[in-house]
Amino acid sequence: AYLDVTHRDAEWLRNRFPTIDAHLSKRNIDITRDQLPVIPAAHYTCGGIETDLHGRTSLMGLYSAGEAARTGLHGGNRLASTSLLEGLVYGAAVADFVG
Image (cartoon, rainbow, N blue to C red):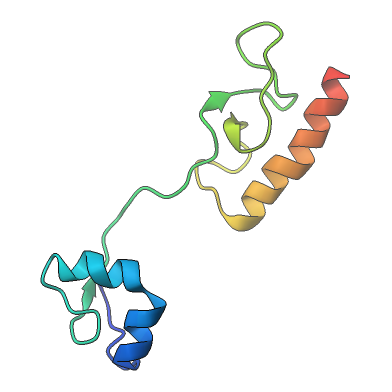
């Protein structure tokens, strides 16, 4: 799969995405003229500390909440609204549970 942004103004592309432009240039890909390859990549993930819905971990007395916790509520993807729910709602719920 490819992303084609060649319809956009070259100066705008380079100014808007300087880091991407530099990365692609090292690979002989011109952001203003070439189709950009789209490949699977790791996305941000929700936590790695396995917890239950009360924030309890396998170590007695250790709790985890928010993006550090892996509640299983949203699977593995961390998207904007997902991280808000994990951090705000479950952070407060764990705090209430712990007391």
